[in-house]
Length: 118
Length: 325
Image (cartoon, rainbow over the protein chains, first blue to last red):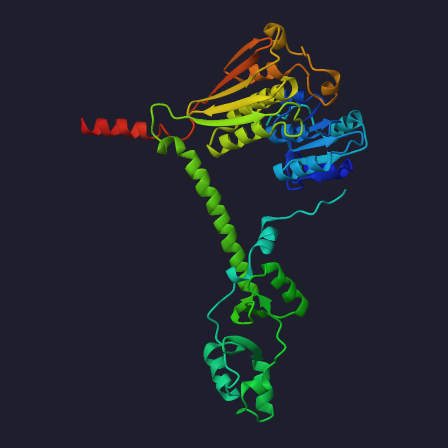
């Protein structure tokens, strides 16, 4: 399992929101821009890749206890959303790259769609 | 990689904690009229290297072993402290936060700082050790307070006896309030965590409550109410609203079916997965609706094993019976 900090460094991501848990281990990844789909498929310690950047992304990440949300295509959450992410301990990672590119890079780092079986 | 400065609990406390909470009081002092010879004895007996000089409660100077050595060298050992003390003393105010003291320790490279109140009266002496001890105590208190409230929450169902005890959490959900969206379900999840519900149950309730909450935000005319009723063995979530109502419930239940307009879909909502997600997370679900009247959604999630250790007493009860019979 890869640490969030390594993903941040290798993918050159900007950290906003809570940077408390950068040593957290990422067990798997999920990508979708539909919140209910993320709600359905993403789980605890997953990294979620989306181009959505509004406050509800934080709500979903917090409810699911995700390791982080990678927000793609240069979308930037507003200050209120960032403040909410900070208070709920949600880590938001920003990148100008597309979701497709990010998922490709995550896969190259060994992050899969399902957690590895122990 | 950009670094966001992290603020730890300790850093917060350095700003929050006033110096008066950590300062050592009842310190040994001398008066300006004490002789250097008397001072020598006071320092020797108490094994200290210096002391504040106080007159009528007010801090007027500070005298150290260094001043004493100089007095000895110049044969001035009978002089009063007044003539030998340093009068320009770096102090901190009792009501300032600990961070001010930390700054002064670093700036002036001193080992101790006299603490005074707003009238200049000596309150005590502060050392780096005092700060460390004060912070450790404060963290301990924080930790205890959190532990106690968790403990109390976990035993609420044992402490309060009735034929059927339930905790009701009620939230008013505003229509189109996308920014506040998910806050009621977050609070429900937090309550369950406090009550000691298993993580899997917390997750199922969180998903179901979130989707119900978002449905009220996205689809209703006037918002609605989200109620979570928590009982030791079951959690019931009820979402009610007064319109517009669902025309075809069977169709609404189909995964992917959505009536959400485009602007809502662009926000990532209206995937048509909400009700399907709720169904997946619940043990039973009931959806009643009438167009023009309103909708009522009831979700039941069972907790097994029972939340809290409420049934832990039963086996020992049985054992006792066996022993006595």
